[in-house]
Image (cartoon, rainbow, N blue to C red):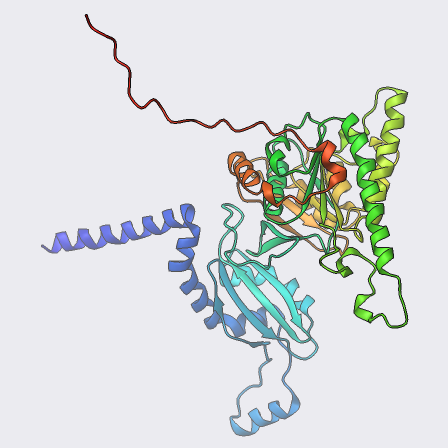
Length: 457
């Protein structure tokens, strides 16, 4: 009996260890909630002061406090760590706030993030400045980008699209009001199309005019044709569509100017310089232009095509420079976007505030996307492996950058969503000639009421 009990105890322990190892690899979220979270909390509480001291995040206490300690307890006066707030567990990690000690700044804590990660046994530690003197530590328990699950609650809204997951387990929000134009680069099978698919599908549920330019004969954007107000599938059609968009932008500026007829009695809130200041009844619907494989618009073989290219590039630059106030936004995608494409390429790229760089084939392509805004992000973009499609580095002209990954969305689901939201497409008469042809969906009628049987003589 004793031997059986021993075997049962050893077998149970081995089964528990094996189950924990399997859960950690295959179901990291479940492992974190059941095992990793309690262990990390205990480790953090037990070693907080010593870890802060080892990381150089402690300061000498005030003189009055040191004098009081010596007088009352006669203990040795030790350096003081930042005051720790409550620990708030999440489904992916922990969050806690620190009140910085005298003479400290958020950069001091950020510089020790890697040391804190190893000391507390978590996957990553991120530091966010909350207010003067207070920072928030976000501890991530596992690699959330390995299997993307978007947060249930996101700060989304009109023209605010949760399109991917950041490496700190927060949602990456594509905010067109804050970042009007964006450049998306990536090699073949890097996940660039998946990013575009998620973005377009989320926008399809909003009253937004969606226009596509896909010079690959429409193979990327044609499945979303029911929701598109206009689609150009070759350079000739794009050359005819872009002047119409420029004219639409000019008409919107005329509408804004008419609203700016300022009289002495006009209230301040009625004076506007963009479409968002117009009354809702007069405000035109925002327009998002998707350009897939922008290099196809630049490549030419004859002088006639070169003249057409220069005209299209001029229209794109005008839309990028002036479109924000008119509610027109650009989403430009491609594999490379450098000066070798031709005249105007660099000028157009400079107008694209947001940058998303997926896996690229060479370092020069990463520099085209991120080199002029965040040089250190170029190294991160070049380190993206081919085994992780959808992984990208995102940045903007503020210099900040982070890693993101787009969740998987099948083409069938995206096409179904666009077909179901086709009635939300705003009516723009100028774009009617470019509206894509939608073949009717075959309807299967009911079968015969009775199965005919042969007559037997």
